[in-house]
Length: 196
Image (cartoon, rainbow, N blue to C red):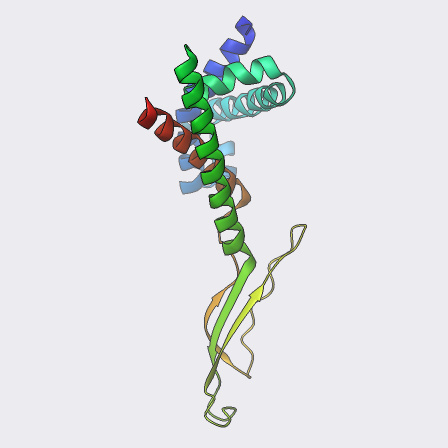
């Protein structure tokens, strides 16, 4: 790994607390007003903004290099996951940990896929519509779209009163990917440390 890549990796890691602070500050205030601010507040906001923009470019560079350069990928991912293969025993433990991680991450992805596909509606018919002792309903379906589908409009019709409506996970794509990546890294480290 060359010195520039090493500097970029350190920058991406050590600037994360500043990015978290920027995110908290931007979510508690109005970003448009903060970008127009003057004085110390404006200088600090602009400084953190430049750090965020530089971080995005640096992270994109590292991601592309990790994706396409196998020797770089091996170095970076070994550091992130804490892999140390100093002897044959550690190589075997690494293989077992990778197998355990693959299975546990696959199980998590299947679980999240099921949670995001199923739809459940529970409702109660109005008194004037209820027939033959049927006062309510339960509807279970599958919601699968190969490309992003806009959220359906929720409308309460006069035919029924919905008591419960579940139409998939409420989380964003980014939060799901962070969850899966964190699960993978933490399960690998857990199994590796358990075996050593």
